[in-house]
Picture 1 (tube, rainbow over the protein chains, first blue to last red):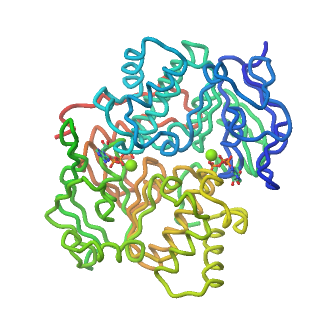
Picture 2: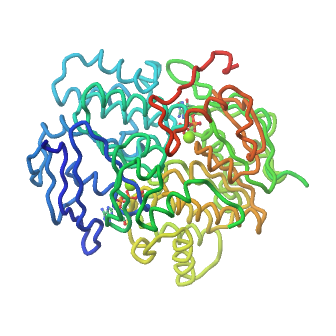
Picture 3: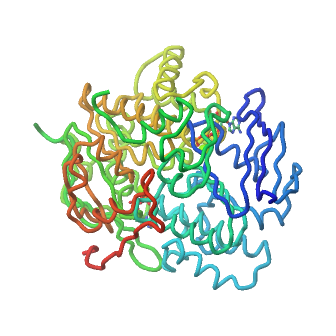
Length: 249
Length: 277
Ligand SMILES: Nc1ncnc2c1ncn2[C@@H]1O[C@H](COP(=O)(O)OP(=O)(O)OP(=O)(O)O)[C@@H](O)[C@H]1O
Ligand SMILES: Nc1ncnc2c1ncn2[C@@H]1O[C@H](COP(=O)(O)OP(=O)(O)OP(=O)(O)O)[C@@H](O)[C@H]1O
Ligand SMILES: [Mg+2]
Ligand SMILES: [Mg+2]
């Protein structure tokens, strides 16, 4: 089967700093792939490279078997949407939620905008009371949910999710994760998801990659991680640190 | 022991075209030289509580309280200049949106150096060295490189750590940390908590730790406040978070994914109207 997303030998450099080196992964249609690892290890850079927002210096990225060039066209963004790590930077502060959701619909020529906006807000647990708020009048988690709604509203087939629930309390996180899973099942969506929360990754993903310093540490299945069947010390360290803070150390 | 911070019946509201939004509706607590955790629903007023203490509420917001006192200073009566003098030096806040709060046109290093130099008389070389040391302390891999980067050139977690470094370098007596580790991998997270822990234990800093990470809060803090819809619904010792009584808190504990647990879909809350009162 042709993978929905195949990355082969990807490298990204910013001047002489190498942010990603020789990274490869492949996700089947309807699959869900997790990225975890050290802060600054290149997880966001990897997603941004797929979205055409970081300069690839080596390797190839293919969507549905077609290798992407350096430019992404409108059809690409119809198919591939990204939820950015930083919900503040990705939403224009002086726009209402309504405008933020309308914009992608207008660009891609959807005609039932009204219905879609109401439904999208409802799905992420923000009632229509939030529709005419400005994004700077929202809490962190409310903004993050608007960013998710904005990505989902175009019904993409591949979703790149960069820490999509990092600003949400556990109850809203559960709702958003359930929504994402349900959409994945209903629309055969493909996910690549970054999270520092190993429990979230094992809950949502079939396979995952552990990253450190721009490189792959290991790739494994979520089941292996849950069973603590890992091969690298770095991954073991992450598992241990997931238990919480210990005052004695 | 006299309290470092006393908050009594704090209210924050925002008049808007479509009515008044009551973000904080009567919050009271006192803080000593300890680690106080605040958890709660998204939009429940955690950040706005912190911002009101800092004097960083948005222009049109209305603040009201029976008492808002830091180290004997009445914050409600303090002038703008007095508030500014407290901010950064004696009270600091790590904002929830670090990359957005950093100055986009100034390098990370310069921002830390300038913060230090507005609060302390130190020479350029000394300031640079202390900034680099602080970046290293928060586990930045290559402090020399990151010192010269602009905020848009660092990762989410690096921006968060730059903000932490900037807030800690002035040595505040009270630190409000709003989701300070939400973008950090779990190992770096523990290193940052260890730094905060030392500041509380050795220097007697008071810490308000706002987080939705229940595991971290219960293992790190002394006490926890649980907020829902602008109010405190429960307060308990952090280590006994699992014995919480309020249905919101109980629900929260139940809907976290766990490594190895296979619960699809995750349980969700049935939010009751009576929780809001
Ligand atoms: N525009 C840029 N210019 C220079 N360096 C950059 C740029 N963008 C990213 N980098 C560097 O690339 C590295 C990887 O960053 P990236 O944002 O991908 O990390 P990450 O794994 O997402 O980390 P986090 O978990 O903290 O978000 C960092 O060292 C960062 O400083
Ligand atoms: N400038 C503003 N104008 C109007 N309403 C606002 C403004 N800022 C915040 N609010 C509202 O006040 C409420 C409390 O916001 P706050 O940022 O304190 O929430 P929070 O508990 O920090 O949530 P989160 O966990 O999502 O960050 C929210 O409902 C938010 O929409
Ligand atoms: Mg990132
Ligand atoms: Mg907040």
